[in-house]
Amino acid sequence: MPANLESIRFLYEKGIVQGYPDGTFRGREYMTRYQVAAMLYRTYLVFADDVAKRVREALAQDSQARLEEALAAISDLQEALKIVQEALEDYPEVKAGLEETRKNVEGLAEELAQVSSQMVTREEIGELLGSVGALENLIKRGEADLRTLQARVNALEQVIRDLEGRTQAAQGELNKKVFELGGRVDTLEKKGKNAPRLTVGGSVGLSDGQPDGEVFVQGEANGVRLTGRLSQAGVQVRAEQGGLALEHRSQNGVAESRGDLKAFEGVALKLSAGYGDSAFGVASVVHEPDGGLVPGLVAEGGVGAGFHEGNLSRNLLFARVGYRFGNLTPTLGYYRYQGEEPYSLLEGRLDWKADFGSLGGYYRLVAFPGSGTQGSEWGVQFQSNSNPFLELGFKGVDGLVAGEPGSFSFRYQNATASRTDFTVRVGYKLGF
Image (cartoon, rainbow, N blue to C red; front, side):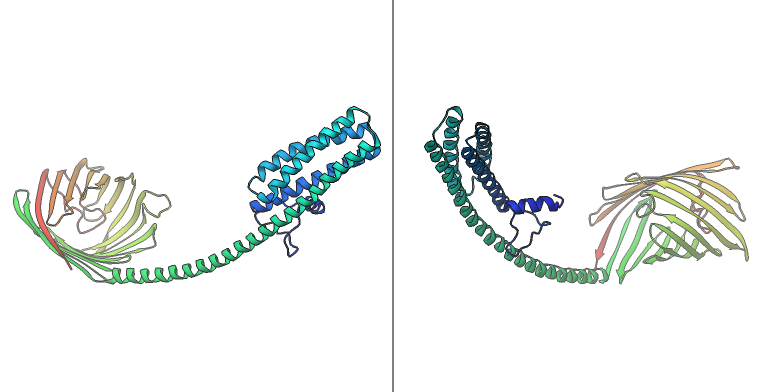
């Protein structure tokens, strides 16, 4: 409750609130049930004492109006006594005294009722005053019982304070041990992350009805991740550390080496430089679906430039935007290439994945405005989590589909007539 100095002073003057033994009030602390019981009992004693005084004054004045007023006050005291008895049921120190007080108040009420209905002598009034004195003696005994209860409360509060002190000390020691344990766990995790790991393996099978195979290696040490693949289609080697990636690949007679640098997270700046049939560079801004300004938003826009026959005559402008819906990510893109074979490309793409082994796929629909040329491409790939593992792949192409509009070397790697490829391989991998 908000502090109210007048109310506190009133309760203090009535003896209902007495403060702590050291003279403090501590109004911001929570009250215990024992403190509430003591205050409730004191309130009742103050009420009873006030009623006894009013009865004595009414008898002394021998006034019918004052007697009726005193009788009404005793009736209120009886109602209050019922509430106090219920509230203090668990306190044997005051329970017996309350019961004795109740009987005494009922007797006094009966006697006063007789006085208010008939004339009485001075001797009978003297007897009534004796009953009032008995009630006042009970009130004094109640104050003694209350002091006994208060002593128990003070002792209990001291035990609670001692327990809180020991608990705080134990909590401090526990926090220290948890902190030390956390440091050890961090050290072990860092050692685990920095521990060299190496996986080698391979697979054999059929691709488009012809024998097919692949050899791969994956390694990680000190935060550097290295992957390499060798197949009939070509070779790919990639090294990554933080936001830096270096890659070389050769596929279907086309080779390219490049380096990518990504700065910042969420909304990142990406710089790429490489060499294929000639040197090139690309700069873009990437909005990542995790950590970006809009969660789930996939967006990228940038420009590029490259050399052709010794001249900086190639340039590229591109933008794409999409949104990730769970395991589905649809995107729309526009690419404008100006060079030896200028073209514009509109692309609609849907990427998806499933929580079943390593299962994913895509669908692309592309159009070349102005030329009337268009095409589509789709693919599905699955690899089991078992060892030996199973690989399944489907890929279909219909019409002209530019391979990678953002790369000068692989712009038309998938340009082909309509065809469908099916790949099935079985492989095995070893971890070190």
